[in-house]
Image (cartoon, rainbow, N blue to C red; front, side, top):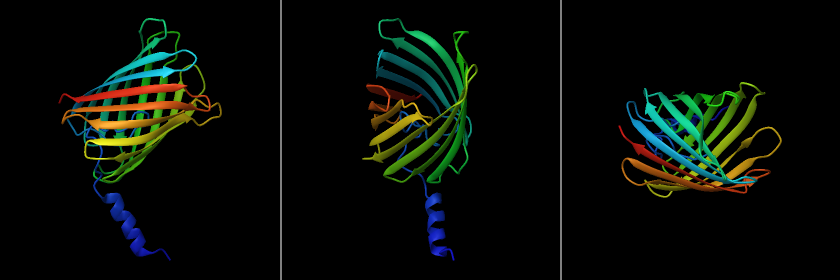
Length: 230
């Protein structure tokens, strides 16, 4: 027989307020959470990555993030790349929508996101992507797991994952560990140690130092700056 007290404890835990995460939902660097901006809130996000492997490359991703409703956010971001020894070039523009499936106040969270990446070069593939997101938050801890499906227009589908766990040291500062990589064999997995800091009421800075596992980058430096403009 199922223990009724145990079931009750699980239900209560899932309905506890989710605290200790940012209001914009950009809680990690490699992984996505189900936390969404409040309705009507708008953010400018600037992400800069430096990835060292066979050919070093800098990547810049400017983004606008908006809370359309209490359960849905809209996102528009661009991909700009600068390979070593070359000029920076705009590669793609990607609209994205994220829908939360669980109550905003619950500690146990779930969401789905859909993205369509439009390549600038007509010879490059557009990419359609879907992600399933599950997370759990307490006052001190935040964890998330993503299952990602991508289908380039001119090639076969790809499955990957991203995951992160974060320990909040205070209301504004935290440390975490993140992973991302393909589900198929072939490697290219990355592990990243991240810092997540609230610089002010409207400004957040995340930074992470990563390294490859089974074919990933030699090392990577990834930073994100989030500013609330509305």
